[in-house]
Length: 392
Image (cartoon, rainbow, N blue to C red; front, side):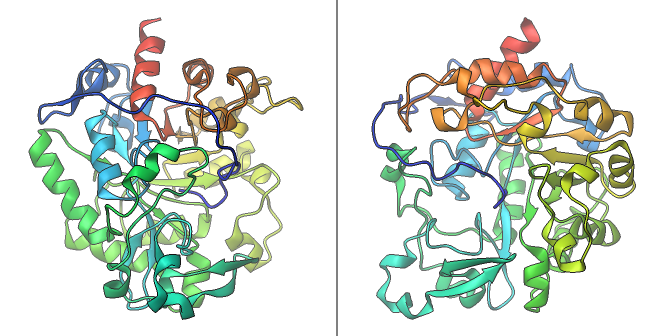
């Protein structure tokens, strides 16, 4: 998810955090010392009931790009671990096309920071500068590679300054395709004895449509192929571009979620169409009613739920949760991470960029607003925080 996510490349080398060492037990995904599958079942009892999106646990723990706090993001190593830790849903993945039209899972179409492409002399000539959603961006882009070429690359940790120990796994996994993810979902559902949910995102759909590589139609075709295009299908589709969600609403019946960045930002499809509205307009009661006409949920940045003060500490919650619920929308804000730079100032412990702060305190503050779930890089922390919150 989310090229709009901020503060993801904070620099720093000091500090220390525990290496993930929980023993994984059984096909159900329970983890020693963690709520795991049992905790998820308990949370379901606190849900809204029903099927589909509203049948998920509340608050749902969504593995952001898998278990990206512990493994290089958008790899099967990251996705598997998210399930092992007990995540209710796995964000698999951010979908971008290849030159020959396949959908692959990468945080962005520019792959210089998430693969070893910069170390591959055979692809040195592919480095270029493009304007991506109005921003000049230099690197290597998925649309300039065939799938076969991308499959020769290997994933690496995207933010090594914050997660130096994830670099241990650099080079271990290849780039997954969306079709492989859909097959993996079925395999994991059978193996674990519970329905595995995924939460893919259409990335930069306006940009790719202009290149003749429309994302939505490719997503819909694969969902139909695997029988996962229904109202209660365990595949939630999300996008920062409302028109992409509107297009998907015409193509499939899956639950749909509009992602929302900072209040003063404009979705790029609005920029391209000359629509002057900002995210602030979309989160008014009128804007939320409009979204509810074609989507079932919103994925706001956490700052839209509880804004930060000038000193970086949390202020007073907004009315967004109540306003969204009033028109029937669920809220799955993003992104909770354990490391200091990503936490509100009052929950940081020291200044080390790779050290953990009081993530439990931050989770509690956000859960108290009534959100329906949260994206997190650390599903195990989220599950423990949820158990504390529900039992408190």
